[in-house]
Every structure is written in C-alpha cells, then in structure tokens.
Length: 253
Image 1: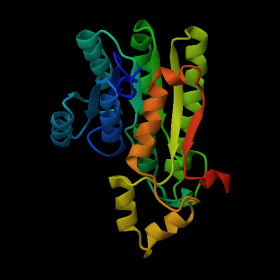
Image 2: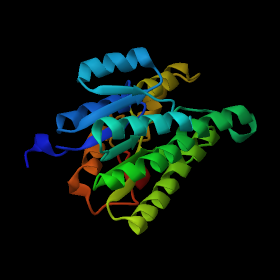
Image 3: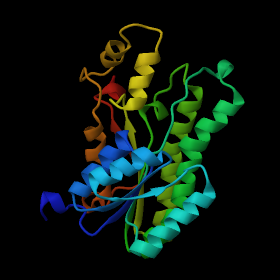
Image 4: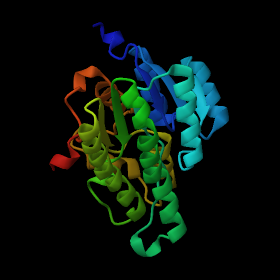
C-alpha cells in the first residue's frame, strides 16, 4: 500500500477540528486517503477549514447528547459507515482545588470527558456495523502527570485515559472489530497553549516549559497528527486499550 493510501476507504469523524490539533489531524488523515467529516461549535472557522481541506463539516456541541445522535445519524445516512472517531474537542482549566469553582469543574469535565463518553456511546454501533473501527481519544500528559494548579483539567484528562481502556475492553468483548486508544501529548504549539503562555503572569514561561522536556522543544501539531494516523490505520490493528505518550521524554525523567 502506498504511504498516501494508509486510510483509503475509511470514513472518519473528528471533533474540535476547526483549528489546532483537530485541523492538523484532519489534514493528515485526508492526505492518507480518508474521507473526514470535521465538527466544531465555531461555524465560521469550521466552514473555512472545510473549504481549505475540501471536506464535509457538521456542527456539533460535544456536550449535547442530541447533537451526537444527530451527527452520527447524518453520517450513517450519508456515508453508511464510520471507521475513525477522534474525540479531540477540549478546553483548558486552571486553578488548584481550593480555588476552582464547581461550575468551572463541571464545565471542564463536560467538554473534556462527557463528550468522549457520548462520542464512544453513539459511534460504536455504526463502527461495528462498518466492519472495523478505531476510536482515538485525545487526552494529555496532564492525565498522567499532575500539577498543583490544574485540578479540573488533570482530573478530566486522567478520566479519559481510563475511560478509553474501559471502552477498549468493552469493544473487545462485544466485538473485535472496534479498537480504542488514547493519545497523551505534552505541551503542543496550539492556540490553547499559546493563550496559556501569553496569559501567564511569569515571564519566559515558554522557556520554562521547554526546559521540562528532554528534547528541549514543544511538540508540534503534526507530531500528534502522525500518531493519530497510525492509530487510525490498519498498521495498529492489534493495539487497543493503551495510551500513546507523545512527550519528548518528559515521563522518562
């Protein structure tokens, strides 16, 4: 198989794909032959990305169960199959446990965790009927290594890690056609991380972040996109229930 056909004949859905990691993953998967449907809540940017990548888009608020039912139903009607699901949509959320409001706690978990549950719940039946499927849940190194001032974010991303394993075991028991894994990136040069850098009260925050990483640089979106392509492809057909850590060596220290 040609390297540009690793995802040929596969249909994929990516959440939070108007920009950032989601957009980069969509671009990489399309380049490998996949038919990708991108989703987001930012319609203007989503439409621009759809035109740029020449792919379909659907509006999706990942926290709403009714939206998930509609989107999966639309894909079933239009494409009759779904082979790739990337649960990528997410938000940040700073604050230690004493200074995090319950409303903020719920919001972070709703976007970062509930959305993954809903995506898996409603995509699995169609993926099973499609003959094969790969679910890729975008977690974070913050789901493995905690910090004192990101209690909600740490909690939500750690839960995605374990939920992915539960989903993988469920799929393996009910059918061996659908796999589920999580990806755990370190600080990646995205708009969300740039906002964190720009809003930090400390000076030289990017330099401090880079110093924590043995490879001495931030990850680039393409680094995560390449990993997602691998997990979406048949090359990873015997990989399920695991986490792919993309951290430049951070967790080895």
